[in-house]
Image 1: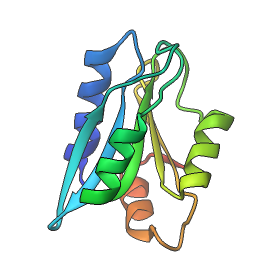
Image 2 (image 1 turned 120 degrees about the horizontal axis):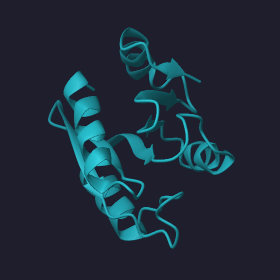
Image 3 (image 1 turned 90 degrees about the vertical axis):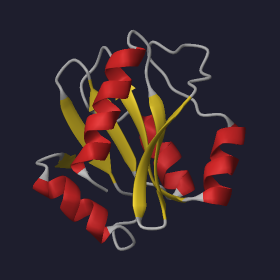
Length: 128
């Protein structure tokens, strides 16, 4: 993952407000991609939901490095739902707060994702 991915998350989030943005950081052929997904939640101002179709496409065609989404109104603190999704899928989660301009990173499987953890520590992100 690169700083460019984080900058892209911020740009996508700004463009999508007042709704929460969401997507994936994916990897293929040693390249990291920031891929925006459609937020299919019924309450896009305070929630995000990625369709099963987009999850399946990502799983079949890429290595999923992380799920990302934005918080428009709140800070970068993860909700119980955010952590539950990350734990259940064993995929790291990134949240970007438009309000505080801070990024938070949660890693459900720290052994598997040590490189990602070190990247976020260098970027001075909160690593949970």
